[in-house]
Amino acid sequence: MPTPEQMQVAVRAYVCALNAGDLDAIVALYVDGAVVEDPVGSAPRRGLAEIRAFYAGSLRLQLQVELEGQIRAVADEAAFAFSVSFESKGQRTTIRPIDVLRFDEAGCIVQMRAFFGPGNASLD
Image (cartoon, rainbow, N blue to C red; front, side):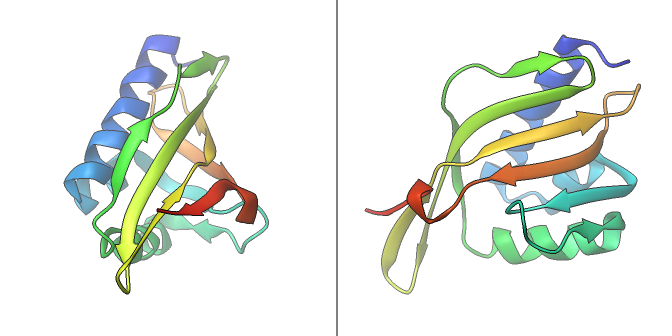
């Protein structure tokens, strides 16, 4: 089972990679066969190829990501609130999701689920 410290390091690396627009660093956090459901209720992306394509699309927006509060890490999962800001078509938007990551024993991401809806987005 991963340690809370391993999971916290992975979450921070995830946030840093999103801010840097580093697609390879993001995908390297995931195991082959991982699943991303972003947002929850959407079609899951399965495997590294689908995950890479998902993040490649997201990174076109030049994201500004910031943790909002503590990372909760217990058993093999970590949950964290954060903000994601970007500009699209001249309009600045901020989304405030809560992500839940599940990890394998080596501290790599097996599953990511992003919890947010229309009430968690604002136009700046």
